[in-house]
Length: 347
Ligand code: FAD
Ligand code: MG
Image 1 (tube, rainbow, N blue to C red):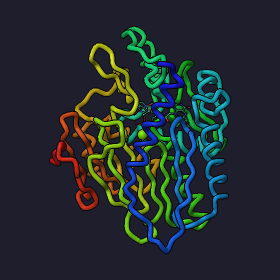
Image 2: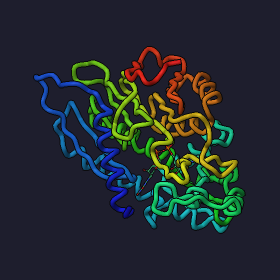
Image 3: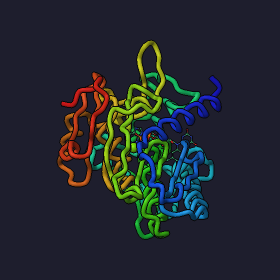
């Protein structure tokens, strides 16, 4: 299928999923209708809905900020800072803006926390596989072997004072696809907060961050995506306020060859898609950058290590769905999550 059409179809699917993921219910009749704007950003459909203000000018500020983040961190924009860092790998450090530096710094922290299962220097392997693009292919072992020595988040050199980033080997490449959407969602929250908005929903292609509560002072209800259904079906609902819900899974970007599915979360040690019994991991926490990173970290770590990480953290809650439709939850989830699809079994 033509790449452009496939991308549009993906966006439509994501758009439908996002809308039906939110089960917000009706607003009180005393309140004006919420205002909303949607746009394609960061390779996905971004929707922001404000429930307690009629100031549509805010959308210009919000979407300008998203533009700036995209200009800095997108691999699809030739002049981005990330592409400048990658082009200077093995040659020289590159000075970047505060936001790019902060996201890279955070990505390296998640490398440590996951013992390397999360590695933002995964770029050469992401390009080799091309999963999610028209160039998706099963690489040869020899091709993978040439890329593996380039994947090493530990070797990235940051200079905090000068805000420079240096990749020491030519061919190394950063990819912030697992973390930057979370950062962008937090920036949307910050801007809404500065502008005294207390009731809003930020939706970055299904990564949800809610501000405050609904105008009737009840929590937001957000559906947890069914990883076996791309059309917005949810397995259950979490009730949250001032929190974020982010999912990583095998259903987001993948291709199939000879009956085998190859998805987009790669194992930095083997160079192949992470191969475990998980279909998806959903994180609930307060900061979306953490939710985005942790969803990938726990997916890449697998059920056992992932549950241990979640239960060892005071910050996050996690919902794991396995390929055989079992649902495992970390401490605290039971009080906010209702499983509604009885094809899934809560363990
Ligand atoms: P996540 O689980 O959060 O992340 C998976 C992604 O992280 C993979 O796709 C890969 O990029 C990377 N990754 C894989 N394995 C690992 C690992 N072990 N450790 C760390 N990272 C790993 N997509 C487009 O199609 N077109 C665009 O124009 C486009 N622009 C973008 C601009 C920006 C600034 C960003 C951040 C992303 C952009 N994307 C674009 C990508 C897309 O929107 C998603 O961010 C991406 O596909 C993964 O997000 P996810 O939530 O689906 O999965
Ligand atoms: Mg992620």
